[in-house]
Image (cartoon, rainbow, N blue to C red; front, side):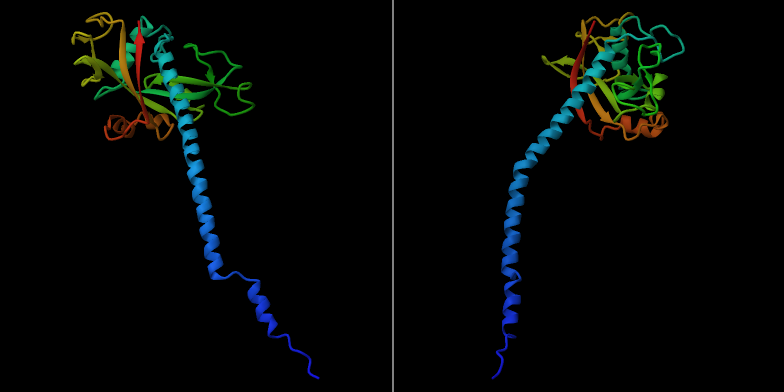
Length: 254
């Protein structure tokens, strides 16, 4: 009597243990549908979070600039320890007037740096930079928001302890035309409401109680003081093809 052969059963078992091409295609289709739904639900949420973070950073940068324009410090833009300006309004006037000249502008930079709470403050009232990251933030070092001009000697020291990115600001006065505020066509000139030019707040004086201006915030690709003083940066600063990261309309008051 012959023993029944089971060789014919083997191919059947092998075929039943595998996926057919049709099953694989269906599985991929189901996965694609699920991923599409996932992306549709969570992508707007992720974009909203990024916008929120960017908005918070923009608010911080704007507040830093506003506070600095309203603060009269000991002059760190020259060897003299006395303030370079008679009032904080004089300071704001010059920063806006000189911060966006077609030629020989004095750029304004906004950033954060690490300050050393164990060392005395500098002559201008700001924390001494902590160039080496050691210890815990808030305890061994503090993160200080700051705005300085390129002519400020302390800018180079701050850059050695930078936290995050550096931004430069291009301010332009907002003037009245046809009953509304518009960007001045001559950024380096501050005008009175009657259209006359003001050289400063004293001789040929600015007669108004406040200066309204638009501040364009641009990113800086590197944090090197050598780059900021180079012709490469000057070319970038003067370029009209580079769009700002964001723009805010602000005002300084007497």
